[in-house]
Image (cartoon, rainbow over all chains, first blue to last red; front, top):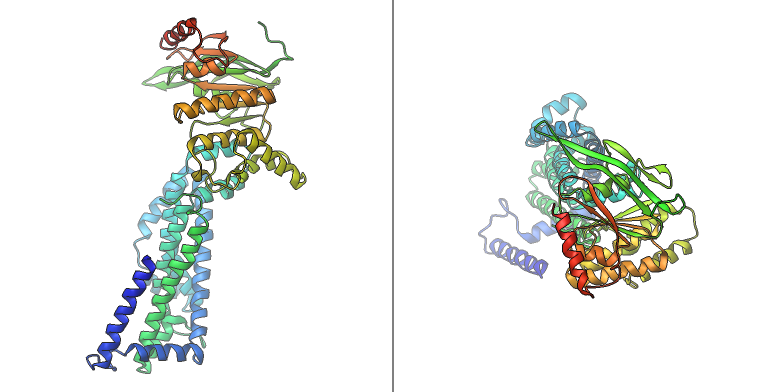
Length: 254
Length: 255
């Protein structure tokens, strides 16, 4: 029902947009019509290099989130084991979390140059801190009784982590990944625009930036739409699917 | 009645546990001793704050002591194990991310390794039948009522065949009608399987209904007042002197 309403609103906006273009209120050199954008998007997807760029972006963000996730699990594990370490991590998260990834660019470029590694570092910076913050809240929220039951059944430390800590803090971990994804997605597009392509592929951000050079304004807007669409698809469908299969099924939604 | 080794399941000997507040030692448990005979249900009865839950935690190996020891079959208890499984008061003790079947499977598969699949399936379904939850194996805990979750917790605890069942006010959080039926369930399983149970409660009627013996704790001393044989097991408020007994115990645990 909610999805249908959102779809109706989106279609209505699209209709206004198209009507504005038809009536001549929107100059196609300033803002293209939806049909031009759709045409450009279809063409870039079918015969252009957009699929390559999408894959490039998704690969980087996938790797970045994977690294962030693993780092968060290892750090979270150390935090459970050592309370002193946890306090340090909490402070570091608070300090570094607000720092925009783009501000780190000069430093990152000096460290590793402008390749994929630099973009991944920016992504990990965007994703890791909010994820870590949620993992810490998640650890704090686990009812002590679960560990007691685990002790009673002789669970090893590794089993306590994978069979108790992670599922018990799943609502926090998933919420953390959602924020991490959104931050990483923004960081990725910015970094791609700044770094440009190494060879053929430079990601969706680079594709948009390149369109500017060719005055391909429909291509630019098409790229923006694509960024929105992928963002929505991942948030609603990927995370929606994960939530339905886990925390919603377990009655753990907060 | 003395305890011969053959019949004694567990012994707690001179347990002392204290903490310091403003430079003064406060005793949670002081010279706490008790024996548990095989096949009996013994209640630890006391007011809240008397140390009864701590006593149970010590027996189960969950908490350390300042002095004294707990012997299970003559062996000193140092950590929790499958020998003694605890059922808690909290009706959220089942893991919410596992359905009832898998909640029960977890300890069973850990205690009995490398058995054929039928072995586990039979054990789990037998337990579900025993606690009256047949057909609820694929339900997640949040889909069950509080009383059903406690039945599930009992099933999970018994499925790995502990020598002792430790119960920490397991029926305190359910309504009176459900509580009665859970007490009946416990007695039923006890009769059928010959369980040995240490049962912590603050509810005198509950202690009188389920126990073979009742250990009465004082309110603040951390000491055992007395351990008494109970003649009211399985009976509910039937005769007049039941109330005298209840009032008498009430006075004792409030001192």
